[in-house]
Length: 345
Image (cartoon, rainbow, N blue to C red; front, side, top):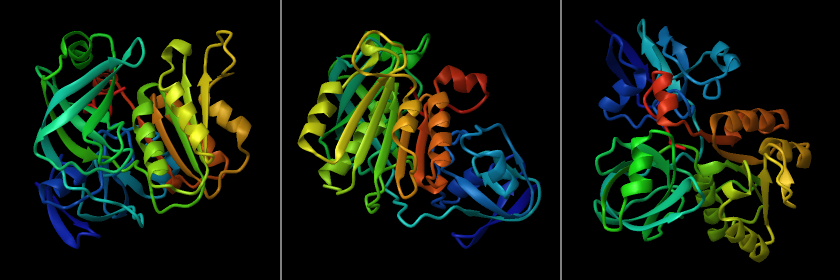
């Protein structure tokens, strides 16, 4: 059995088999439907259910709030039709579509960023060129491991791709990266994916918030904004547990010295006698800003932090469409929820 679903922007009606999601049917039909994690966590495929009925599999409240659901919004990656219908993905003026590539790469750099985060640099051997927007991610497959999603930390156009891999207990990929990865090893990369990327046409203030290895996409966003000489103020808050979890502090402090529009604020959640600010990173933002209307927000890191920061930004007047966020779930967290793995911590 199947149902007819019209995709408004594509001007096409698809036959969607029972149990198949709208997003999967659209992608199988070659429609450029916007998507990210494909697991109900990022909200990139949020859509209007113009008519019809769908069954929704489990998803994060960050990706689709109860209020949004009540207003007829769905997540195409979690929605399987129960009747004929019609859907329209949310529009945005500056959505960019880069060609998806399957790259053969080799490791040209591996170093410890912290005690539990490693930076991996890859040279593209074949399959390029690889175009992406700052803040996007790719599916990365290390030898002998399942594919995992990691955000690019480098600026688009750099000769090497940079990924930040956090050690997770029992994680096959993190064990490979921390214990066995060597220079010259082959790595497959597919992408780019994701819609939480820098909107270069925006001229209002930028508020960037990263937690842990959420540094990767935010690093790309901030450095790209500086590279493009965007004129607005850029406020970058980086939240970690303690000083041993802090990395690239000197790098961004130096950038802030050279660029008067960049303001870098590291925040430690555990007091350890350092002169840095203490508390939760979203609380630091709350203490510094009363009104955020007209700003763009870029948020990446652990789900709890991302959800708290997103709520705060909305409370301070930032429109939901101006909040571009990636909640990083570990493979274990995703497996426990019975979902496909999304962006990795």
